[in-house]
Length: 227
Ligand code: C5P
Image (cartoon, rainbow, N blue to C red):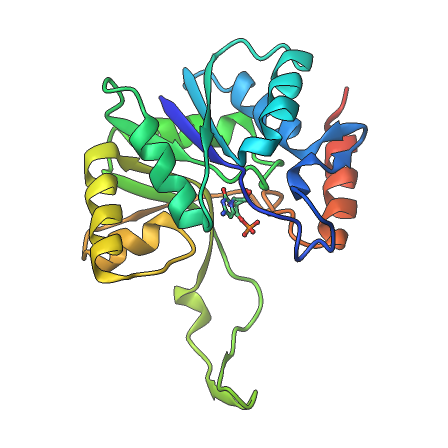
């Protein structure tokens, strides 16, 4: 399986300048934890790390320091996650027919979640890891009055990995560029193209490191896992 890791974002919501994925948890950059999980997954054979060019030397050092032994490639990202993923898709080797996309910022995803997604991608042409929402969710208008309360039974929080047929995902991205669609995950492009996307049970601990509190929670979870 080929894996693309979007890692070209910034640390705006984290309140840091530079790439938040270079912040450390338990003495290792966030992206190292993500890469270590990819390393342990039995299904992943090739990893494309999508970053800003200025971070490439750091990424190379990280790959070396964790002894990353799978095939890897650094790919220059874009202004948005969507652009970064498209850059990644264009850099995949021709042999890649299926691809998993996993945010570098989700450094708690387990190797077994990668493998479950890889296995399921042999059955479904598009899938995402997701978990059932626990909170009651409100749809809110511009003045912050509640406009609606959707039925919680139907609400799932999207995570990554997200997996797709490479050709179909490339087509969806090309259509998005042509029609000016802006989305925050790849499944949304499939939805807009009216293509089915299957939900795979994700992991409650698979949070996306976004704000400082996420760092503290991730540190706690990773410390429990170290033997
Ligand atoms: O900002 P956020 O954490 O939601 O971004 C999700 C993922 O997309 C992160 O791993 C981030 O590094 C990546 N990203 C990217 N290129 C961008 C913006 C975000 O690869 N231009």
